[in-house]
Length: 310
Ligand SMILES: O=C(O)C(=O)Cc1ccccc1
Image (cartoon, rainbow, N blue to C red; front, side, top):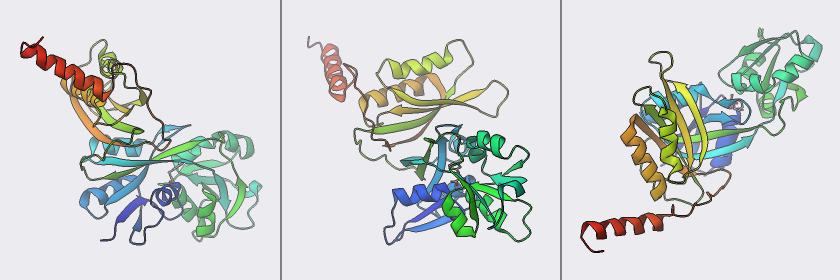
């Protein structure tokens, strides 16, 4: 059966480029553009798509809240793959438009944040507006009688919507990288590759001194390195946060499994978001005593103690 991949559309988004990098066109795959992150995730939840690609975080601007909040609060989904993509932003407008003509610029909030310095220097008078994606912004600019003069998007979006590049490479950080994730309905995680990441959301049981330290300790004592930790409001009152965590390793590895069980005991809620191969291929540096073999040997020792075999 043909696999349907939903993605943050319309055609020409960076997310589409990430999806094409992940699934470079098995003949039977269908890529389905959606109008927003929530629509992508809902299509997967409803079974209208087998998988969905959405942006998760950027090396300059941090987490994409629309994605994170959906993964934290919506009906559970599981991350099964990630793609890290360098992004290059272009200023796109109707052919013949000069920089001096541009008064109203539209794009995705993350693109805006990453081109702020360039806009301040080159278009200090321009008003900025946001759209559901960079390609959605390009589409808006291309509409007849559009109220926007230019969009910030991938150059390919300009080609797709008949816009010309007024400026290219306008991001403030040349080496900006965006991380995209492929989500599916919950399923048993794949086998560890040795270079994996585990994502989860931890909810503190009650606000008390050291609550975050307790969460971190569950990883620290088992030698599990974290690659991201971000607090997000739970929506249940000021000062109430959950922690979105990415850790090195796989839930099928003992040290990660034990850390997760520790969190499960001390947190009011714990949402497993997936164990999947890292895009950068990074392998954890194992601390002494934290390998699967060390855990197995400790379990055997405990059994011996309990059975009086010492
Ligand atoms: O995929 C896109 O085009 C988006 O609009 C999301 C986005 C925005 C900025 C950088 C990477 C992805």
